[in-house]
Length: 149
Image (cartoon, rainbow, N blue to C red; front, side):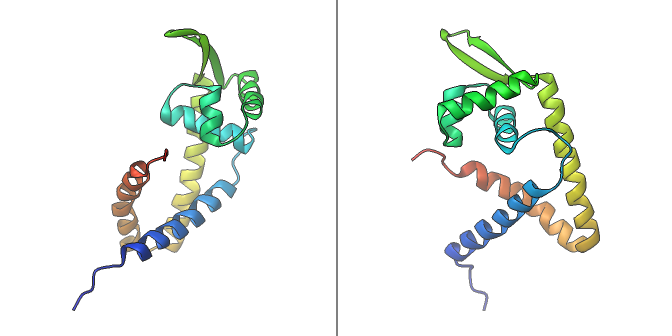
């Protein structure tokens, strides 16, 4: 007789497994000049679109001053730009530049290649198919988690 999986155990196993994966991927060597906070801001702007510095600070759970320094560094490198909000001229919106997108694409490609190498070397074709089937579910799970209380 087959027993349904315990949802709490599945949730804990997913958190553990995905946590290990994310930490290890972040440790992979990537040839860029960015700090972790700068990479995080670029990725968030790419994923979620333009935002104010205050919104970025809240999302990263850091002070506005720290985010201001991070954004200033990215502006100085030509990876993001600041523009007045067309709907509210008092507000400044930060967005990724073409150079920032190119840097993100290169980083993702490098990390993708590094993961592909591990998959090829250490996983069977069957396991790779299982991971391929699970990938959209993991993304859907991630997008389904509310980020505000």
